[in-house]
Length: 137
View 1 (tube, rainbow, N blue to C red):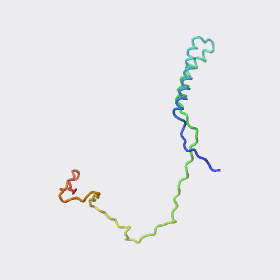
View 2: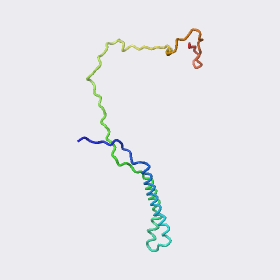
View 3: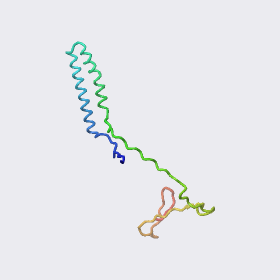
View 4: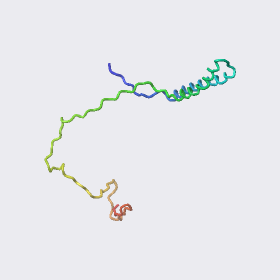
């Protein structure tokens, strides 16, 4: 059977994740308020439990509030890299001194071609402020 791949490895909806974390933070901090207020009327070893809740619940609430849920989905495997194999279609060698060894250097300003009409003789050449050369329009 063919192996199936996930189209995306995106996590859960950010709005739903944020709402879930806000609910968890609210529940933890509500329990802390209960622990702090119970310190006034609880006696005995129960006061240690209420004090521990009042001290450690804020840390727990922040840790839960900051924990972003990840999708849990598995990222797709990377494909195998392509291998370049040579030798089958070699190019024919050219004799020495052929056109492949010739270097052609062109040191001329290119003409600009446009769909407009050719420049008329009546228009004066304009000078380029960057290099000081005159050019025809």
